[in-house]
Image (cartoon, rainbow, N blue to C red; front, side, top):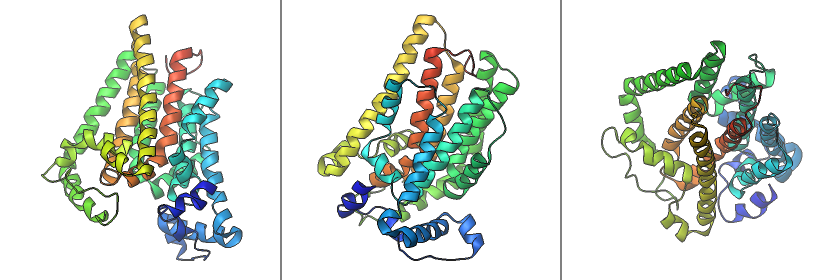
Length: 343
């Protein structure tokens, strides 16, 4: 928080944090506060900064994001070494900056962490009923990041159906194929709407901004779909190599993204090698990873592909979610627990 507010803020704009930390309590209609994320942030940030000041007013938001991370990690059975490793992955500057100051990202880290805690319990077959804080987090999800609900509810439905009917490998494979078919069908049905929306996205990014790229990705009809694989990758990675060489801050993020993707590759290779040795492929884990990563990156890419700064900022909303989730699945496979839904 101190690094972001005292150092980074002198080098670049920290999103809308200055707006939230205005020191003025804004009181629009209650319905607007409860249904509009910006109005809610205006109110919460105004109250926090009025009471605690423009610096310490960030602390409540920092605390929320911290608790979201704690809630999900507390569901894992970790050794000290494993805990240090996962905390290392969650301690990169970009994630620390955006999750430690007043902003929608801190709220996103909070509710995504709480929801992940529920999903982990669901996978472990410990419970089905949601706690009040988890229901509240679903509400925040729809207010702040409704596009993420596709990935969240796809995961929950897949796990719930697999558990309810005690599906074996064949059943889980069939369920995955059904999910893919249903997803493709929905994309086909709404292809024209998504195509039209993609042409409107560049208007939300000013070329006067130092990091905004010229729109070369959505030029022809249905480029939104044709260029999705590249868009999903660069939307998550952030700056390109040429951009990183021009700007020191983006070079730092470029290295971060390399380490993160390296972690993903390492986990995949470990489990691939294990599958080769045992001649067993865990379709359940493959399904969970595919559903989570595909939908999360797919809904993220339209908001990220035209600006590396936006890509990294918005990535922090779900970064903690994917890191803890992948680590959780890796541990489940590695240690083959007696209890759990990964058999």
